[in-house]
Length: 317
Image (tube, rainbow, N blue to C red):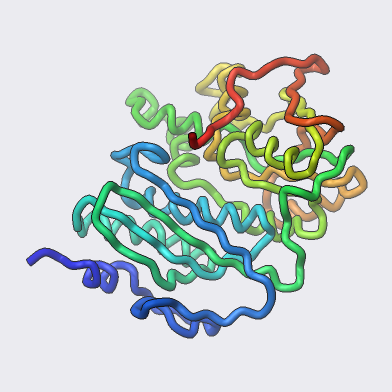
């Protein structure tokens, strides 16, 4: 007898929770939570063959599906609390579902997030996760708070995920430590939740780098009614990407590759020491790469000279 929708949900997605604010979870028409103050809500949909390879391991698919949502919470300075899952499957492959659930729920446990409901349907593999976070008394970080003269920063290193995606089918890099590390940056990105919370009240604007630095910094510029100049020689590039790719290719991935899920944010120059202290407390590397200027869009410079990058980032249509 084929395994049904409710059996799959009960077997692989129902987990006990000690969250006192979760009043009603999986099993009813809606979940019920108790919240005191403002909530941050985000949703992301990942389509197989579009947002991730068709043969991506199920555990990595589950991990990434939640990680991209946790990154949205980080960009808002929110504390992630609950999520829902809408999963469309071509068939009821229990081995795949089990590994997927392990990836998603393992990451959820690490960040204190409870899966509280969702939906399971048949069709082309599609994963939608909605996440809900709390903001307590703090104002959220947004894209619209930047001011001309603010410094532009990024956390971590850029370009690793795009390089890792390019290496997924490269058998020569299969056992290479640098290649393994880069592929893992794509398969299992690190959401900068602690960094986002630490930057609340320090950063003026923020966004997560999902579609590429140029595209996402461009969103800050559009929302903040200004432009930006970045110095390409200041881009934070990992030792791994530089060991496997020429500098120009590494910069190409860093500027437009996407999927890094690092934070790009702005802060007034007077906040420089506070930025360093906040990110040190969060255990997160940070690099100043430019500043906001009058005008529109993002201008790249190398050694003070303007140049046009080959790729400006991912677009969905």
